[in-house]
Length: 97
Image (cartoon, rainbow, N blue to C red; front, side, top):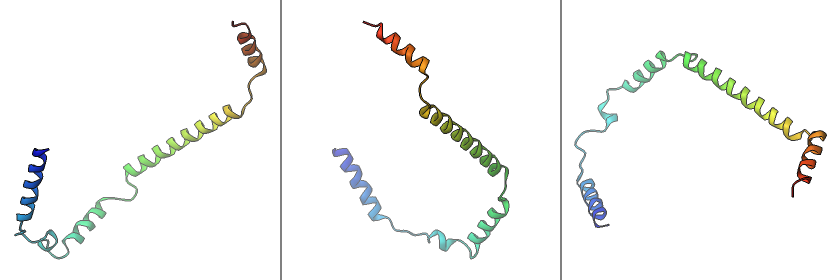
């Protein structure tokens, strides 16, 4: 525990001695730089790119598989047992000691 306390004390002392000599990042950037960067980024990314198309197709396929799975399991849960299987199951368990 002593090592952890010493490390914490050193960290806090170093943080207390910090004096920012350089201006903030926002002050260092020229006027309108952030706007130009965002505009350039938006121009390079089309709304209907291949990644978006691929993602949409994958999402639709996953939803279709999930819907089929839910429908199949609901059908199995709500269906009653076969009478023949019930009789065979009862007959097999009746013979056990």
